[in-house]
Image 1 (spheres, protein in one colour):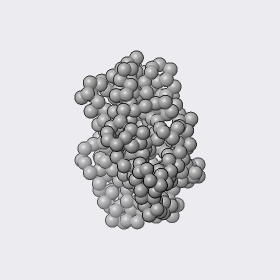
Image 2 (cartoon, protein in one colour; image 1 turned 180 degrees about the vertical axis):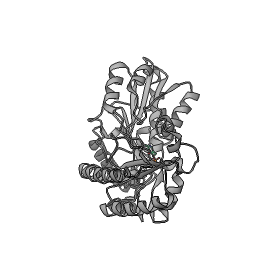
Image 3 (tube, helix red, strand yellow; image 1 turned 90 degrees about the vertical axis):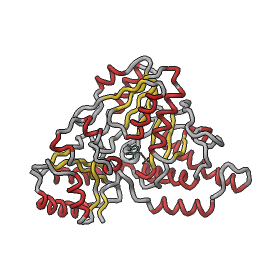
Image 4 (cartoon, helix red, strand yellow; image 1 turned 30 degrees about the vertical axis):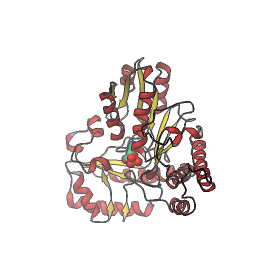
Length: 377
Ligand SMILES: Cc1ncc(COP(=O)(O)O)c(C=O)c1O
């Protein structure tokens, strides 16, 4: 099988798998227990937290292990908006965020916040002039994703941050689910207040991830109970998942440069190949993350291509895993005003450093055959 759907999820890295087994076998105590076994397990948890904090350049007590990107995004949106609502009740969210941000923001509206959506241009890039008009004295939170999961577009995050910092007291949350491990992401690199990371996008385990806050920033908790994770996320901390999250983050960070250049080389080659088909339009802009190529074949439905490729053991997806089970047109492509003849035909190829040049070569052969059969015009 050739698996080019790594933005939906990645295969667990063998090192992560080993860690998962070892922690479950040796450190399965409750880290809050006061006996020695509990202490040892807690030490392991705190080491994982410290390692992540060092990589992200924040304090260890600002790393909250969660069930993944969705929970972290919810925690950031509700937790920051509610904690700092004395600054105002106006929230800005980009129009192309992941549903876990969009839906949380819509829920805020029901709780008395005013939410506005920052528009994007035809490449999916946030229109800075629009942000300038929307930002107000009472804006409490701006949430912007670093890399979009459907097209791979990289937002001009530094420019956005500079404007927001210079002109408001708003907090900034960045969903880095698709960028961590492919681009530099940390609080020293970018002056944001909160960063979301999901483990299963970087060869970690599904159902795990974290929200990291900049030192001194606080959130209101969402899960109440025994006060674990510094009172922010109650529930017995799943130490094996937390330790594996730290492991996946370390692996991704240690190989960041090498992985990014390998991915860029592979996807550049692929784009070069795809543009040779007159019916194909590349949707990913030139300023894209190195692991995502999205494209559309004119007047051909995405599902047709996906099924044809699947029959040849090549796994790809429509623009996002979340939208692929719904017939709904992607909100990202709509926000980009993609023409009707292309909008239903968008395919996303997404790569991991575990993919190989041989797989790209094989894909090219299979894809050429498939195109000969379906003939987009
Ligand atoms: C940009 C982005 N944010 C958030 C999420 C949600 O992450 P999780 O699957 O860990 O809940 C995803 C998953 O597809 C994503 O691509």
